Length: 269
Length: 248
Image 1 (cartoon, chains in turn purple, red):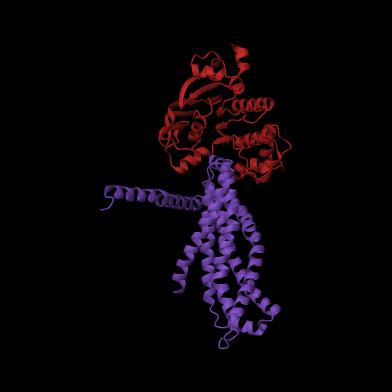
Image 2 (image 1 turned 60 degrees about the vertical axis):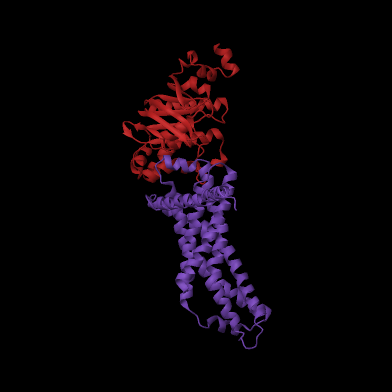
């Protein structure tokens, strides 16, 4: 004999709680997010405003991220090469594999996904806090009162600038990643640089670069739109702006990992 | 003229505004007064479209606003100027750029025309030398004046002020009140001011609506408010010892 009706009641209450806490809030947020994205592309601001904002964002989101992407790519490339060298001790495996494996790791995963996760932290929190502060100080209301589509004015230049600059950052990261591996070989002497270069050029598939670029474009959209969404709907004060900046980074990171899986399945299999 | 007809606003189960009926005429300073939490700000937000009323309609010179399309709303909004409680100046822009913003967005003025208009607006609010400063570099009173300059830049037909004197000293408050009244009479705007400052009520209240718990319980002007018989209005008007000493 079980608990009978009490157990059934408990189960249905638990399911209702889960639906309310997880399901409803997810679908509600997703619906609001889709509507905001739709509004962003509807009634764009005048061209000269868009141009000004676009170049401003290009500088803020793109140039401002070059340093961190360069440093991380260089060091990660070097670390990947060293780890490969440390783990390949079988004499049957040629040492050139170090260059080949470093290239594959950097091109396929690191320069697109890991760099996107880093940018989700840097750029995502900055976008969410900038737009969130504008919300709580009524600057977004002021734009709306003037008859300006605030979503388009604030978010569209960020998305477009990011869509343009992220693939460039990814290409730069690829180059610096394999350069880091080369420098590691040069400095540590674990592999002679010509062998590393031979491995680097072995079985090179240009599609892997295209695959990485496609991923970086999708991730750029995810980072900017989710962060902008989190900032745009902030309610409260500075504490809520901070909380939403954190949520922006977490949500964008999860979305990146999810879409990474889907895109890998679609493009590589 | 702005007409508010049978306006209701609920947040969840809580009714914030109940059957509000008001008319704001042009060339007059229309004040919405009441205690904090009475529904003044919600009423103003409904009036400018930042909140959607649960029921009722708002007409701008006979044109429906509440239930109109986004395009129609945006067309009416271009005729609205609003000064927010904190100024809501764009902090990444200088004072000059803030005032020029609506002009650049909605007109095709040349650079010299734009400069002339910005200078005129900033002179009108007695701020001729603040052009290059950022909002973070100016005082609260100056921010309010820049916000007024930005609000009048496009010659609006309707002007809204949300707590224009909050956080200001009495002397600066008088300057802002005088400015609101001058602009209203000069440009024949429909001016709506949301305030709980009794000085403003007595100085510039051409038409006053008193809101209590979401209901309009009294309407009148600055001359009749002192003798109002409604207990809630009397409690509000004579809340300070100074007002008691002066009028009782």
